[in-house]
Length: 144
Image 1 (cartoon, rainbow, N blue to C red):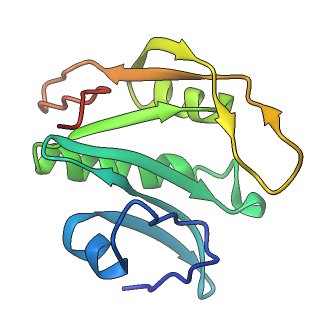
Image 2: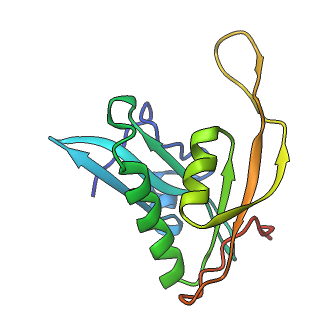
């Protein structure tokens, strides 16, 4: 198991602690030469499923790492009968969601809070995936 530090790209702010994530969350990472280069994990957890979050270090993008990590997390969701919610707020995320079988469900305006002057995002798309022969039921279901 890899313990990620606070300044790492995995955001656990919606969990009470790293231990809470270990108990309730799920995640997969890819390591190269001792460095975690990407991760796919549950940034939110509810009784019905998870919200998928994904990040790959810039130097390792466009090498299939995001596809591998997201596929592994979706496989876990299938095995555990969990909805895999995908909220794509950028074009790359939209393309990956579609590649993995999700279909566009709607659009929205995204706003980002960063340590630079405010900027308005281009928006994002909500996705859901068709149920397939493996029983994958992924959508933007409400997390009650």
